[in-house]
Each structure stands twice: as structure tokens, then as C-alpha cells.
Image (cartoon, rainbow, N blue to C red):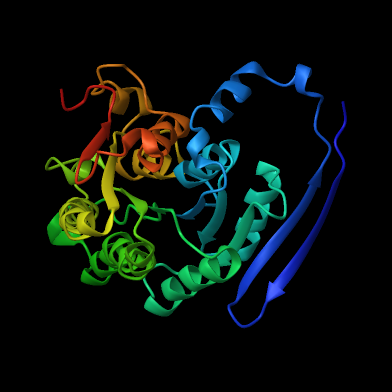
Length: 294
């Protein structure tokens, strides 16, 4: 059965945000994929919830957005380029009342404040904040890394996560509820992989600030947790394979399950932490590592 699409962009000039409109003709209910229906019913409490996902145009972020939308949430997609956000929204088949697209550099305070304000203006609240945006940075010994490259990794990964909580938690604390999920890495739990010290420093930092934010947020009814994937099948790991001259099978050999995580497998854990199924979980590190740290 064919599909027909009509798209339009409505600009919100005062906030620099865009609402992306998509009309889609879907198959009759009895023809829909059973697995998709099961996933969509997995967390009924997410229906109508308001989420923000950074780094949303591809990889883990896009998979997280897809899961949230399938479970009825409305999502603000944040990434550097408007074109990439529009492409992701089109690929996901999101309707006009489901997504808000806000280009932002997460290392810049004004951009982060803007995507938080845009979300509240559009939907009135923030229930879920997924600080996922991140970069790997240089793959070189510590003695050979340009300090400017170190600063950039820290700015995007650690400062970007901190800024997301700085502005997002103000809204959540005031409303007395919410769930923050910060994307760290197994590199935020162990001294590795090597040699990517800026990345590891940033991810250890995310682990630490997530714990402290959980303590500060608990009296306000807000939960904060971090997710720690092993290598996942994304553009970032492809870059690391190339830069480290390490074949995929060699990198995967260190994972007891014998393969990389899929973005969907990581997104499933984020979905759990976003939902009421994890209502008594805060200040925790969730490994999605195929047994690497067992």
C-alpha cells in the first residue's frame, strides 16, 4: 500500500524553532506489524508526555525519538543542522503535533535555553529530557592531542549535558516531576577505550554530575539516571574503527555477546528510564554493554 506525504515548516521566529508537519496515510490496523504494536503499547504512561532528545537526527538519538513517538510521546528534536532534523522527522513519519525541531549547539548556553523555552512554549511542560548529543573527539595518545580538541569534546559532551540539566531541571523542579536520562558510555565507568582521553574524561564527568543531579532533584520528584552503552552500531563507532585502525570483528570480540549493540537496544533502556516503570530508579548507571563489564 502506497503512502502520500505533504510537508510544511512553520517558523517560530522569536525562538528560532520550527514545527515540522507531516501527513501520512497508514495501513489498516489489522495489517500493521505486530512487533510495532507491542512496542507501542509497552509504556502506556508515555502517551502525551513531552520529551526533549538532543543529538536526535541520527544514531542513538534518532532511535530514542522513534521509540518515544511509538509510545505516544511528543518530542523536541535537537541537533546542529535544521536540514538533518527535517530529514530525520520525514524518515520517522512524525505528525505535526508530535515533533518540534530546534537546531542548537548544545555547548552554547543560549542555544540550550532556547530549546528548553521552545518546548515549554509549544507544549507547556517537560516530562523527559534525554541528553544524548556527543562527539568522540581525537583518537590519539594524550601527548599528541591538541588542547583545543580536548576542550571541544568536554564542551559538547559534558558541558552540553550540564547545560541541558541546568535549564531543563528548572522546569521539572517547578512542575514537581520528570525524568532525565544522560547518555554516558562504558568509557564513563572504566579507563578505556584507549587512546581517547577527552572522550573518557567527558563521560566520567557525565556519570558524576548525573549522580549529584539525582540527589538534588529527588526532593522535587525528579529522577536522573545515566545510560552506558558498549560500542553500538552507529557512525561514531565506524569513525573509531577507522581512526584506531581496528577491524569491527576485533572490537566486537571484547563483548561477550559477540556483537555491537543496536541503537534500538540502547533506546529500549532509555524508554524504560523515561517511563513510570522505573519510578523508584534514580542516581543509577544502566549498562547496555553485552556483558563487557560483567
